[in-house]
Amino acid sequence: MTAADTREPAPPTAPDPTLVRDFVDTEIRPRVERYDEDERVPDDLLRRVTELGLWAPFLPEEHGGTGTSTATLARIHEEIGRGCSSLRSLLTVHGMVSWSVWRWGDQGQRDRLLPGLAAGRPLAAFCLTEPEGGSDTSVAATRAEPDGDGWVLTGHKKWITGGQLAGLLLVFAGTGEAMTAFLVPADAPGITVTPLSGVLGTRASMLAEIRFDDVRLGPDAVLGPPGWAAATVMTSALDLGRLSVASGSVGIISAALEACADLTATRPSGDGVLADRQLVRRMLSDMITNRRAARLLCAEAGRLRDTDDPGVITATWVAKYFAATAAARAASDAVQIHGALGCGPRSPVARLYRDAKVMEIIEGSTELQQTAIADHAHREVAP
Image 1 (cartoon, one colour):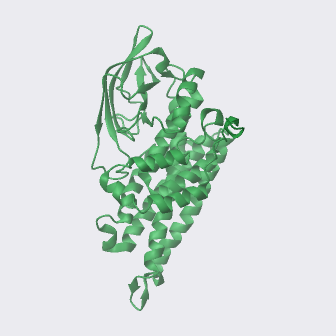
Image 2 (image 1 turned 120 degrees about the horizontal axis):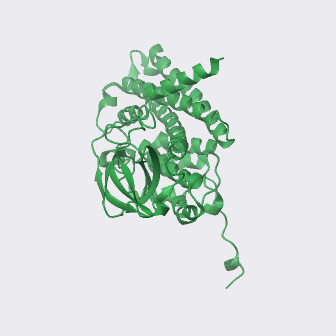
C-alpha cells in the first residue's frame, strides 16, 4: 500500500452555481422536451445529479454534504429550474426530507439515513397532500394508531412528487388530535404506489398517489416531537420548499426571457423584426425587471434562513408569491410572443407556461400566500 492509499479522501466540493449552469445548458436543456413527453427524468440524469452533489448539499460534511448555504442553494435551484422544473421539483422534495431528518431526527436517524440521502440513495418523497386537502394542511385523514411500542399507519396521499421512485417517505399522519411525522420505507408491506400521468405541468416529476393499508412501523419511525409535526417538521420543511419553488420560478423567467430574446431578434415583423415592436419590448423589460426583483427576494430569504432570522418565514412567503406569479406572467407573454410556435407540440415555451402555473399552486397556493402576507401586514401595524 502506498502513502497515497492511506490518505483521507478529499472532502466533497460544494456545488458551484456557474458549473450547475453549464450542466443545465449541456446536459438538460437539449433533452428536456423528451423528459416532458416521457413523463420521467431518466436514470442517467439522476446519477449525474448525485455526481454533482446536488441532492442535499446543505448537509454538513460529516453527513455527506458540503455545508452549502441556503443562499447558494437558491441559486442552484434557480439554474435547475431554468432547465427543467421537474428535476428541480425532485430536488425540492428530497431536500425537504433531508433537511427534516437533519433538523429533527435523533442521532440514530441521522447516522442511519443522512449519508444515503446526501447521495440520493434512496431518493425521498414528502407525503403531506391528501386528495381532499390541497393547500389545507390541517386535513389529515391519514391516521397512525399506537400498536405496542410502534404504530399502524392507514391512509391516502396524492400528488406526491417523486412518489414513483422514492425509497423513503416522510409521511404526515394524524395521531389523536394532533399530527406526527413518520419516516416510512417505501417498500414496507401495505404500501401501494400508483403513478399519476397526464398532469398539466412538471410532467417528468414522477407524481404518484400512495395508499397505506395497515402499515406497521417501529418506534424509530417517528421524526421529531410526536404530536407536534405541524409546528416543527412540516413548517421548517415547507419553508425550505417554498424557497426552492421561488428560486425555480426565477429560472422559468430566465428561460422565457432567453427564448423570447432569441426569437424576437430575428423573426420578421413589418419592415423590421419583432424586437422593434414596443409592446414586445415592454414584455421583455418586464421579464428582466421581475427576474431581478425575484432573485433579490430569494437571496434575502436565503440569507435570513442562514442566520436563523425570525423574519425568514414571511420573507420566503413574499419571495415565493412574487416569483411564482412573475413566472406565470413571463411564460404567458412568452407564448404570446411566439404565437402559433408557442402552442405547438414540444414547444419549450408551452412547457414553461404549464410548469409556471404549477408554481402558483405547490407549496401553498398564491391565494394562501396573499392571506399570510396580509396577516403579517396587520401584525406589523398593530399597536
